[in-house]
Picture 1 (cartoon, rainbow, N blue to C red):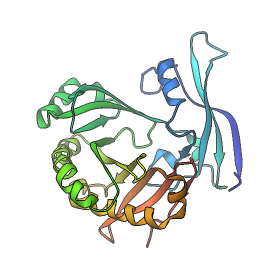
Picture 2 (picture 1 turned 90 degrees about the vertical axis):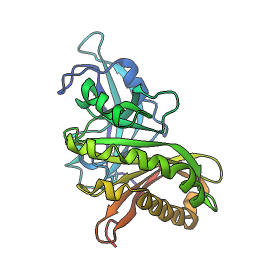
Picture 3 (picture 1 turned 30 degrees about the horizontal axis):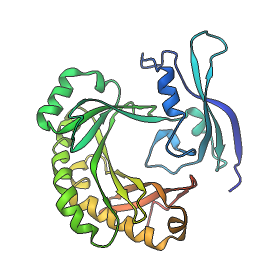
Picture 4 (picture 1 turned 180 degrees about the horizontal axis):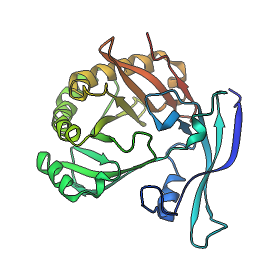
Length: 281
């Protein structure tokens, strides 16, 4: 698809103190400039449940010409829709960084947004609930004011015949334990999203991002609902010729309150291209 509009050299982030009173290092920007896939989808209001409206490419770190010792992260922005007003209000980034908890052999990772990752007492509460979890910082620009946390299941499995058995034996116990963090997160005003890493039969890993219905996170992120969502993705991957050709980088799934199950809303393929899928049946 030919982009409707292109902005070259857009500033995405920088090392100057931001609106949250935090500073990012040049090393942080360099990590952002080396994403796992060279093309990063552009979301509306940084909201993972909304359709993407373009993508960012050609990331680079450049010196701030107006202030010595400061740096910018820049990228070229390509809009694939003519409705770009929302996107022009901000350009998102997201990076997770484990810094405490069980960093050797965790059952999962809990990444907290600013300012929660600076709250030492809160982190102690999470670790007392589940000592086997690693705690991390979720660096991001977010329109939600930092009210979304991210739970990542560490155990991976291959999406091949009989994967349901592997899921039940290997992954489901961890998903149940990680689910015990949800009430604590909600009591602090945080709504969790969930990521499960899978492997295709060809071996490459890809992430599945589950977005629950707000207020019903325990139900939506139960092992049964996660398993059913993975089954939906399995059926899609077998029927989509592009998945067979280039693989999957990430998949987003949104809980449908009418169907009471997850539906695929976005796929980023292994070659960096992406597609929005319909939200309503």
